[in-house]
Length: 622
Image 1 (cartoon, rainbow, N blue to C red):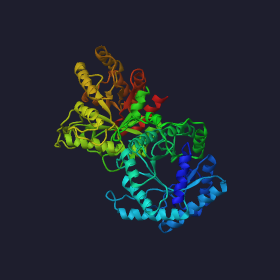
Image 2: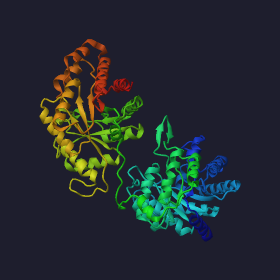
Image 3: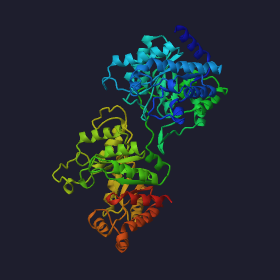
Image 4: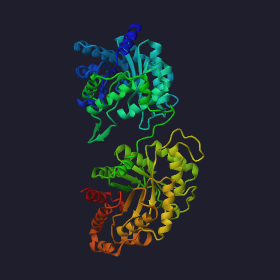
């Protein structure tokens, strides 16, 4: 093994450019009809021709290292398919198959033994003890080494504890070259919250020869992460294998957005960063690798260490790179007309209807779903759960309504952390309805913060990485904060004063009360502009489709801030049984007017009639 080790590092030293590895195995196998519920590793035994053809395609594309099809061939993951007794057989078959393909290619290509996570949680966060995990890794590594791999690749780990044990197991068992690679979430941390710098330091200390990142997002994210790793451990070698972007569910299929040309263009950036091994992960194909090969084969000027220091982001190793803005923020910045729809959480346990409604709204073209919190002080499912379900199952961004009423300072901060942990970034801060009007009039109605104070807490404390008391919360949050606005208030000066305070405290956008008289709303905005200049934040203007005569009368007479002109109420009355359809027509007309001056609309369908909201979305999208 010492000879193998020396040969590998001689190759690294003699190569002026990164060694090109392969791309995704699972993506290609799946494209040939292998279901995600099948055991990909078992194909080494049951369909070696398909696996071999995938290896051959990557070699012909220019790969100098191919990963044996053994990523999940450990006793825990194989047990899910009743194959736990075939660990050695499957791993050896994977290596031998890769060896045969390399021999047939008549090219100098290395074969890596691929070791992935066990698929179980290790103590102290799970039931599997460290010694049991170590034994499982050793069992797989022993089979790979016996089969004759050139190096070991330990990749796609999100748990620093687990990948460290895998590296230690490999180092204790053999002197084989070890490549260790972690995966990161969208906030540039592992699933357990570790920074790239901490991961790099831990893997280097554990004995990995080459460290880095794979999977995660696309090339841009991994370039950023590798920069932090290099700052933390500058005197080691690095590997990078990015996904072809973040996966999306489209028509029941998993799709990736980054194409081969994009990977080819990014190759030079990784060369300049000084990586030793370069390849692709989920979503990448032989076409991606071929474009990277073309880019590597171009004449590239040597990059001096001095130049590398300039090109690597100047970051303290514990500094966190901010997340990308939310999709809502990006749409506002791009000047797009945004369509948001409000949905109420279910009263019981079943979220199926709201998920179905959100799916339909997304298909129609809605940009974001607003999830209310206990509207009219009625008992409903927590909106954080609903937001998370919609974002996960439907794939559309949400905005969480976050009332201050009924929350003390401890609960406010805890709930914010919970929201962020669930991936919720858009937060609409409001006072909330008094409990006296709802299901539990005797319930506590106190609060420690008014909405403008909560906006200040979020924007000037949490988004800076500290809590209300100034204590570190681990990393800055990345909330995009919305505030409420009445465009037709009885007291304009007071409404403007409150709005100015909200903006100063950190409000990023505003949701308005329903507007039925656009010309009056424009007068309010003109009055604001005359005093302070054009409104600094984008507006999502409220659209509440009327459902019938009684509904219109209730809103006009009993809901503060809503004024419905007589002619609109008359239209609803004349429509009779067709009032809901007339309400949609009126709402669509209003939306067209708002397009001239608003940054979007905020549809509030009454009585859960999301089908009517869809009609409005359709009309706006025409």
